Image (tube, rainbow, N blue to C red; front, side):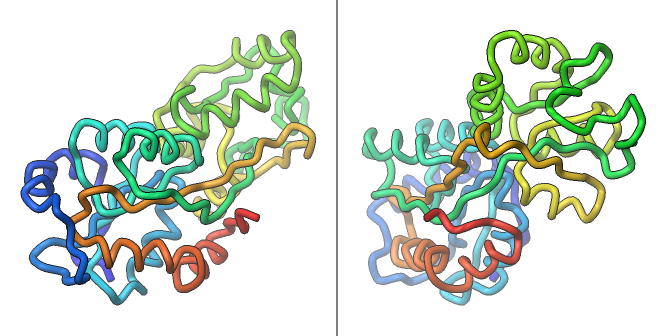
Length: 262
């Protein structure tokens, strides 16, 4: 369950000093005086909020931001109990640095081209496919290259060939630190199109519309989760991870439109 609702990424830096005070971990699973801190990619917000409400082993404090930003905070000394990223690369890197326990792939997503739900799709000005992104005057929002959504987007563009990739990048008007920034630009009408996950479209409540990408272009967007070394509530953190693999967390992910990592 959630005690105080969903937090934001800066919360983790604020609690870093507190976390160091208890870096020996909590092997007996007691909740103590502190919530279970879960640091997660922004695209997981909808599913994790539901899961946290259903999680009975501890009170859950959620913090969402770009996966790369959250990993950087852990490197700088923040100690959430659980770290969930929108790729497997970042948790793997933290494992190599001795900062997390063995990561587990727990879900997957689908990259899609996205337009505002009210955008014209039948006339000459509407964005209906990747080819339309090369037209002069079309405006696009993408993720920064350091964040998973941005890396996945660049994988798609690389597979289009140099000329089409260059034409699309020339129309990029906004580079965002996470999916929340891209979705906001689209819903506000600040850009004509962007690249997001299919689950972000579901979470938009009808404000966004997905355009499926050809299968040969789609990257494999697998997510990984890990218990952070020095977690104050290690047993509860492991229970939270277990529920993502088989339990209330897995069900919340399916309801939000996520796919099996297999």
